[in-house]
Length: 348
Image (cartoon, rainbow, N blue to C red):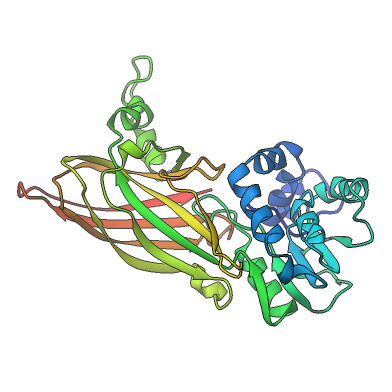
């Protein structure tokens, strides 16, 4: 999950009765990232943190003597990697109170003369350097775009990155597949039909609208993966984060489908040797896990059957760090049974 980039703007004197109205979605986001437990989970994610370490420290020729901007610096781990790789000056920006601990960490590790930390929003703060050679950021959220800071990274790119400057990472690709998950779907969705003898079935619709972030066993996947969205941070625009694209999933065996899943791959293509990591079910565990979208209908498939459809992803109108996701699909199997649905989800 990404780390935030700007401070709470709610004044300390706010009347408690109106405090919630004064806080923006970004303020709540920043406040949640002040808790060390979230940073502990991210730091202990060895795929995540190790990939950034390798991408930076294995490319000292790119960092030596350069000015580096760390967007959403959190505890400062990426800033310290950049300093260790030989950066002349690293500026880390974060809106959360965790930056106060980051300052102590920077000083304890001997980097206070190389790393400058700035508390505030990238959109608002005054930085001590006006142009940067490299921007580093761990901006990705669940399903890549939920609670992500990509819009902030793109703003930083346009405002501060030199022409021909580098971004670490610079490419992300979103994937989907379909899975057999009957037992867990029954436990999560079917449960509401009978709760201690009472009918709670009205909650099923609410439960179906909420994607589940969980680890998916590779053996549950019954289709080939499909890459439905590639985001190149060097050229992407904020408008590109609102999209609708087609997909085709081909079944790899005879089975039943109960859900679609999504994940993403991240690339550091500026590296001397291409470095990337995946958050898919085939890869090592990451804290991003996979995102599960349950269908209402059970879809019977045979080997090589195709499921065709579209997936629409857009920031929520009320809170742009939340996501509205619509999956429309149709399938006609070799048995002649047809299934089609339009499924609406919200990650919030």
